[in-house]
Image 1 (cartoon, rainbow, N blue to C red):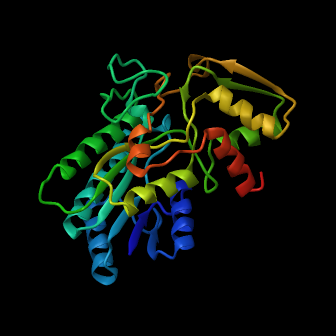
Image 2 (cartoon, rainbow, N blue to C red):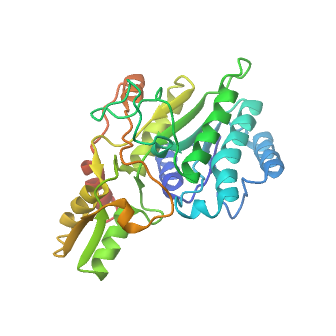
Length: 298
């Protein structure tokens, strides 16, 4: 039996649909049912589910994702993005369940001189992290705590941290949907052109995450995004062209928007490791947006 946290968000919804399609049984929980920031309650809940249903996999799709609001809600951000994911890793190890959770391209600052990094391939799993914002620092702290669990030679669980970027999906508001909604209201939009990474379809993220679990790949950090690279401006332009918007799209710089949280200018992730482990090719981000439109009748 699989146990999903954050089951009603973008990724959790796509995980549920994927598991339904292949006949895998799961228990879906969300923040209204389980407060994962309460460590003792969380442990008791998982242990009860394990006693009753024999949990073999824990999938954590929950998290604090408002990058700017995190600057004013630091304690909650750390609880959701560092403490809770690490607690779940420990609990999974205790019951012998496999575990997967998610981190972010924002753990990098876009300024590294590490020899493994270059703009054509992006950051690898071995590159040194330099998180800039509270959101990113919390995610990175969670990674470090989970890696301590992985390093325990006595555990039998497979434990995965998947870093991803710019996730869009149907279950909650995202950049793609926000651009579509704004285009209905305005004839002029301003979008940054100095923030570069890779848009990622939550449906693809769920599918290839499941492949990691299904194939019992080696524990550790993996990068997954859709293939290719884009600025926020380029992503917005592709979406607006698809809906034949006739307005004026203006490229601006991040500092022009007065955002609370600092973001890396370049944070593309190299997905070479997961491609080689699974023997896969990953769809391009434009193909992913095309399928998102088709899947959801945009």
